[in-house]
Length: 86
Image (cartoon, rainbow, N blue to C red; front, side, top):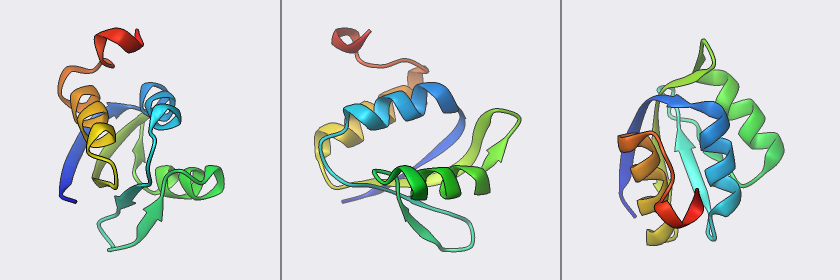
């Protein structure tokens, strides 16, 4: 599992994509906290720590499932989900 950075990511789209993920997804904050984003409570706590004006300012994301990594990386890069998910 490799980490990738997300920047200025639309929070609503990100949470929607998380619900489509099959494996565990973690976010690592600047303070080094590792938060499981598949847990609704942890997601709320973790997202609040990197929220800036309705967007995720910056965080490192790590996915257990390579398909999930592709899905979230694409959202980060292009600002939209995969074509079959629209």
